[in-house]
Image 1 (tube, rainbow, N blue to C red):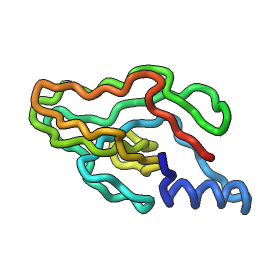
Image 2: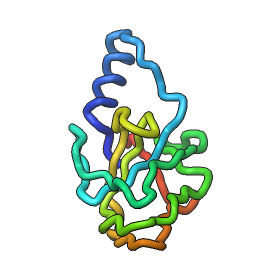
Image 3: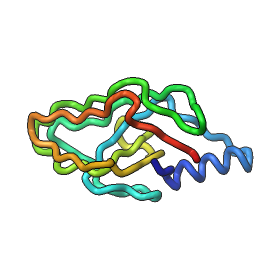
Image 4: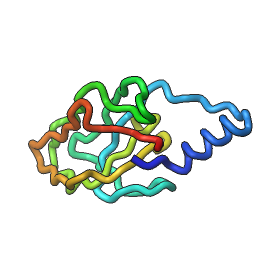
Length: 127
Protein backbone atom coordinates (compact mmCIF):
# COMPACT_ATOMS: atom_id res chain seq x y z
CA UNK A 1 0.00 0.00 0.00
CA UNK A 2 1.13 3.54 -0.68
CA UNK A 3 1.24 6.32 1.88
CA UNK A 4 -0.87 9.44 1.34
CA UNK A 5 0.66 12.92 1.05
CA UNK A 6 -1.13 13.80 4.31
CA UNK A 7 0.63 11.04 6.28
CA UNK A 8 4.01 11.57 4.57
CA UNK A 9 3.97 15.25 5.58
CA UNK A 10 2.80 14.52 9.13
CA UNK A 11 5.50 11.90 9.71
CA UNK A 12 8.29 13.99 8.20
CA UNK A 13 7.27 16.97 10.32
CA UNK A 14 7.12 14.80 13.42
CA UNK A 15 10.41 12.91 12.96
CA UNK A 16 12.54 15.60 11.30
CA UNK A 17 11.15 18.83 12.67
CA UNK A 18 9.77 17.88 16.09
CA UNK A 19 6.21 18.90 15.15
CA UNK A 20 3.75 16.76 17.10
CA UNK A 21 1.60 14.25 15.25
CA UNK A 22 -1.46 12.94 17.03
CA UNK A 23 -1.79 9.34 16.02
CA UNK A 24 -5.27 8.05 15.31
CA UNK A 25 -7.08 6.12 18.03
CA UNK A 26 -8.78 3.84 15.47
CA UNK A 27 -8.28 2.95 11.81
CA UNK A 28 -10.95 2.19 9.21
CA UNK A 29 -10.89 0.51 5.80
CA UNK A 30 -12.72 2.14 2.89
CA UNK A 31 -13.64 0.63 -0.48
CA UNK A 32 -13.19 2.47 -3.78
CA UNK A 33 -14.68 2.12 -7.25
CA UNK A 34 -12.10 4.62 -8.57
CA UNK A 35 -8.69 4.44 -6.90
CA UNK A 36 -7.36 7.35 -4.83
CA UNK A 37 -3.88 8.82 -5.28
CA UNK A 38 -1.29 10.22 -2.85
CA UNK A 39 -3.35 13.41 -2.77
CA UNK A 40 -6.59 11.53 -1.95
CA UNK A 41 -9.60 11.66 -4.23
CA UNK A 42 -10.90 8.51 -5.84
CA UNK A 43 -14.52 7.42 -5.55
CA UNK A 44 -15.41 5.77 -2.27
CA UNK A 45 -18.48 3.52 -2.23
CA UNK A 46 -21.55 5.21 -0.77
CA UNK A 47 -25.11 4.17 -0.07
CA UNK A 48 -26.52 0.67 -0.24
CA UNK A 49 -25.65 -0.10 3.39
CA UNK A 50 -21.94 0.70 2.91
CA UNK A 51 -19.84 1.85 5.86
CA UNK A 52 -16.10 1.90 6.50
CA UNK A 53 -14.98 -0.89 8.78
CA UNK A 54 -12.53 -0.87 11.70
CA UNK A 55 -9.21 -2.60 11.21
CA UNK A 56 -6.50 -3.78 13.60
CA UNK A 57 -2.92 -4.65 12.80
CA UNK A 58 -0.39 -6.84 14.57
CA UNK A 59 3.02 -5.69 15.75
CA UNK A 60 5.44 -4.53 13.04
CA UNK A 61 7.80 -7.12 11.60
CA UNK A 62 10.39 -6.48 8.89
CA UNK A 63 8.96 -3.03 8.13
CA UNK A 64 5.35 -4.09 7.77
CA UNK A 65 2.11 -4.70 9.66
CA UNK A 66 -0.64 -7.16 8.78
CA UNK A 67 -4.28 -7.37 9.80
CA UNK A 68 -5.09 -9.63 12.73
CA UNK A 69 -8.81 -10.19 12.09
CA UNK A 70 -11.14 -10.57 9.13
CA UNK A 71 -12.72 -7.29 8.00
CA UNK A 72 -16.38 -7.77 7.07
CA UNK A 73 -18.32 -5.02 5.36
CA UNK A 74 -22.12 -4.91 5.71
CA UNK A 75 -24.22 -6.91 3.26
CA UNK A 76 -24.85 -4.60 0.31
CA UNK A 77 -28.49 -3.48 0.08
CA UNK A 78 -27.85 -2.08 -3.42
CA UNK A 79 -25.14 -2.52 -6.05
CA UNK A 80 -21.86 -0.93 -4.91
CA UNK A 81 -20.12 -1.21 -8.27
CA UNK A 82 -16.72 -2.70 -8.97
CA UNK A 83 -14.29 -2.39 -6.06
CA UNK A 84 -10.80 -1.64 -7.41
CA UNK A 85 -8.96 -0.22 -4.39
CA UNK A 86 -9.01 0.19 -0.63
CA UNK A 87 -7.92 2.97 1.70
CA UNK A 88 -7.08 3.17 5.39
CA UNK A 89 -8.50 6.23 7.17
CA UNK A 90 -8.17 7.75 10.63
CA UNK A 91 -11.95 8.19 10.98
CA UNK A 92 -15.14 6.23 10.34
CA UNK A 93 -16.45 9.09 8.18
CA UNK A 94 -14.50 12.01 6.75
CA UNK A 95 -11.03 12.04 8.25
CA UNK A 96 -7.69 11.63 6.51
CA UNK A 97 -6.60 8.99 4.03
CA UNK A 98 -3.42 7.41 5.42
CA UNK A 99 -2.69 4.47 3.09
CA UNK A 100 -4.24 3.18 -0.12
CA UNK A 101 -3.73 0.45 -2.65
CA UNK A 102 -5.27 -1.29 -5.62
CA UNK A 103 -6.76 -4.76 -5.23
CA UNK A 104 -4.99 -7.67 -6.89
CA UNK A 105 -8.30 -8.37 -8.66
CA UNK A 106 -11.32 -6.08 -8.81
CA UNK A 107 -14.58 -7.37 -7.34
CA UNK A 108 -18.09 -6.36 -8.41
CA UNK A 109 -20.50 -6.08 -5.47
CA UNK A 110 -24.21 -6.56 -6.08
CA UNK A 111 -27.12 -6.24 -3.63
CA UNK A 112 -26.90 -9.19 -1.24
CA UNK A 113 -23.10 -9.54 -1.55
CA UNK A 114 -20.69 -9.04 1.34
CA UNK A 115 -17.09 -7.86 0.82
CA UNK A 116 -14.50 -9.41 3.15
CA UNK A 117 -10.78 -9.05 3.66
CA UNK A 118 -9.51 -12.15 5.45
CA UNK A 119 -7.17 -11.84 8.42
CA UNK A 120 -3.59 -11.54 7.21
CA UNK A 121 -4.59 -10.40 3.70
CA UNK A 122 -4.08 -6.66 4.24
CA UNK A 123 -0.47 -5.60 4.76
CA UNK A 124 1.07 -2.15 5.01
CA UNK A 125 4.77 -2.03 4.22
CA UNK A 126 7.25 0.83 4.59
CA UNK A 127 10.09 -0.62 2.54
